[in-house]
Length: 294
Image (cartoon, rainbow, N blue to C red; front, side, top):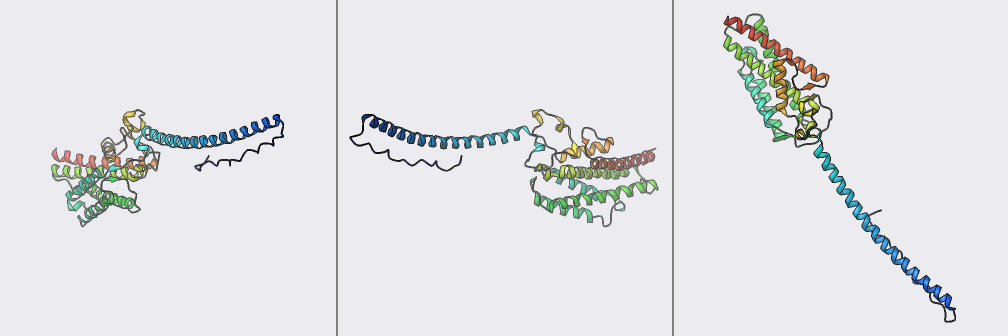
């Protein structure tokens, strides 16, 4: 069946009647043949018209069925498995600005010189990322993801240096003359560590926020609790930065996963690294502070 108009058979004139000398039976047969010819022509024309109308209705029904099926699939598929509008930008931007503020609050003896360099670079990269995706993170530019990874790498470098200097100074007795300032410094380094690893989890899980918004990868690197539920309550749920921040916080405090399970080896190694950094920082800072107060 096609969309073209039906090609009707060309109507031909019935055969001429016989002469007056033709017997009556022959005239009767001729009349019957003429009536059959006209009936066949009109019947073929009507069937072609019916066939054309049925083809149009069938195409419309198939198209409507496809639309309804796609809508049913979208409704029944969880949001974290289908393309969405993307998560909002502002929670990530606030977390990065908090991390920058914490880096500037660390004493200069524990920071990379000059102390303002890395925070300024991080703020500049954050501004470019906001321009690329001002409201929701869904656009996949070639330069957006590398810039995001550079931003997280700079924040990691600054915090790793501060944490290492703090640990070395505590081991050699060069840090922690008073318990109050020591706890403030240790808390700033620890909280920055939580934000930095939350950014790593957020950037790497299923290819990053833009890839998750476009549903380019099916299998997650972190299985959240909502992903294991088959009810209709969590169909519109998808992980955002807040979920990865909670994951980082619980891993830094419990030194193990709580309600979120790492599914890939890189996720397990990253959580292991965070637990080691957090344990070393917290244990040494608290032990030194208790020793000073005692």
